Image 1 (tube, rainbow, N blue to C red):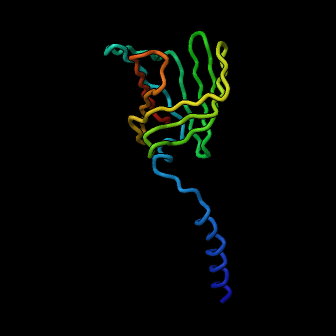
Image 2: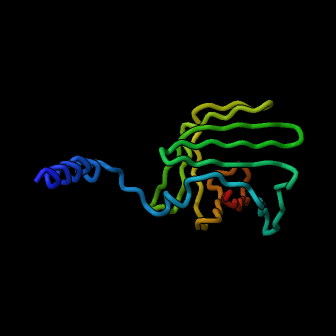
Length: 147
């Protein structure tokens, strides 16, 4: 009888977790982790121009709690960013918000970005850019997940 009471107590003590736990989709699990930029390009006037140099380091990190951090190290500048992330439009868009960006030549606070998700698997993430300052230009970045 005592064993039944202990088992019942254990089951009932975990019951609130099932009611209050956040519903996390499979896309959330796929995006959580550290992503390295493998290839980045801009298309302008139907001409594709590679903009990522493999001598640069560009890493995005998405945490389960919705926080985001980024590190970009190039020949002349190092830029760090932090903020929050969430999916929009049925997980077709990725919103980075409350971004704080600090580099040797740039500084922004409270910036928001929205990126179309062109592909998301457990190993690869392809993001586009919605808001570019140059007309008739699109940008796409391919990230691979760190194992």
